[in-house]
Structures are given as structure tokens and as C-alpha cells.
Length: 245
Image (tube, rainbow, N blue to C red):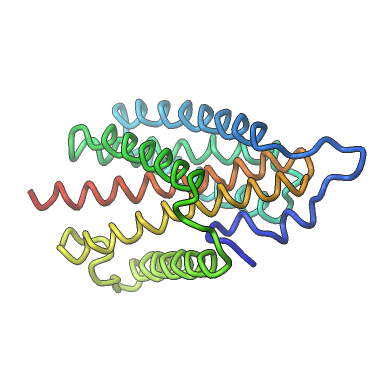
């Protein structure tokens, strides 16, 4: 059964079980790796944030290269999880560059929006962790399939929207600050948040199944992918709301 986050799949972990003599994956180890990746992300995000203030146009071209490189590293990590102790840090360093640039762009339009988005992201992360630990949401196969389907539909909509920019087509309301556009963003934020619950469950189950130690980096990588996505969607939602005021 695949999960909402495409980087965290049962097949990935089943193909990377620890051998008898290997160290095994633990939840605490994955948390530590996640904190390391978050710190690296913050470092490059802060750098590009400050560079945006000085020369946003020149930085824009460099950021596009970073975005493409981050995508390539993410794909490599998903295909070969054994590389994750190296590729996961590289991914977040590259992703941080684009994240800082995007954040600075939104902050220039709406003062204080980045702090609000970051705060809401952290609160959502904690809320989903509490919900998961208390068993309020049960992660069943049907739940995983539903979240995966919703995530896939959102991804497809963004792909169509991206391609549409080059041919003069735009997905209605997806990026608009209309009431329906805001509702769409709220739904996307909810789906992203539900992916966190699935990620928590997946990491816990695979740690219990004693996956290989390096899979802590892969689990942290998958969780960071969801957290970054959640932050960006909250940022877009807040921007839509502020644009209507």
C-alpha cells in the first residue's frame, strides 16, 4: 500500500530492511535527523532571504537552477534510499534557497506573512503529532489510499497549471484570491496536514520492523518534503486571504 507522501512507501522500506548485524532505524534517530535537516534548510533559506533584499532579479535565475537541482536530488533519493544520508542534506540545502526566495517575495507583498505561515506550520505539525499519538485519527489502508488519491490529484492540478502557463491556459481558481480559490487552498492545506499523520505512522511502523539505520535519513527526508509543502500551501492561503482585504 502506498502512502500520501510518495517518498515514503512500504516497498521502499521493505527493500531496505536491516541485516542481522546492522544497526536499525529508530524513531528517536529519525527525529534527530529531521531536526538536522530542518536546521540546514533554515541556513540556506536565511541566506537567500537576505540576498533577495539586495538583488532579487539576479537571484531569481540562480534559484531556478536550485529548484531543478533539488528535484533531481529528490528523485535520486527516492530511487536509491541508501544515498539518503548524503542526498537528504543536499536536498534541503537546495530547497532552502528557493524557500527563502519565495518567502521573501511574499513578505515584500504582505508584511508579517512569513512569520504567520511558519507559526501555523509548526502548530499544525504539533497538532497532527498529538492527534496521531492519541489515536484520534486511525491510519487505516482506506485512509492512506484516500489521502494518496487526494495528494495525487493536487499534484496533477499543479502540473497542469505549470504547463498551462506556457500555452496560455490557467486552472480556474487554483491561484486566485476568490472565495472558491481560498476554499481550494484550505482543502490542500488539510490534505498536506493529513500527509503528516501518515508519515508519522509509516516511520513508526518501519522503525518497529527494524529497517536499516540509514533509513532514518530517508524517513526524515520524506517528512521534510511534507513539512515544506505544508508551509508553502499555508503561505499561499494567507496571501489569498490578505489579498481580499
